[in-house]
Length: 127
Image (cartoon, rainbow, N blue to C red):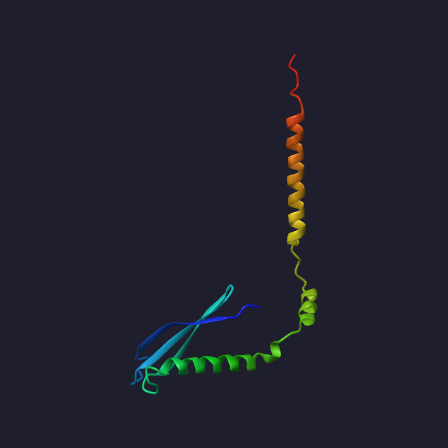
């Protein structure tokens, strides 16, 4: 499995929600394959120096993921559990791609055979 790419997407500053102190919002972009999302971390600008604020936001991001992992721990299923759940599904199953591909290959072979046969047959004589 590939690793997640976690990048700092942007840093925004300003007053948020009528608060008296300046806030800093650091948005992280998380990507892995088709999975992509952004996660903003909001901090008080007065609490951290400019050089420390990114480190603090990374620490909060890490803590957020640790808490998320702890909350979803009981959701984990083994491969056998997932296979059993898949077998219980009452939805009609789509044709497998392999069987569809085999059918399309058979169809193209019969078309090729028919075309080759038409080329080798002589045209009918006109009377």
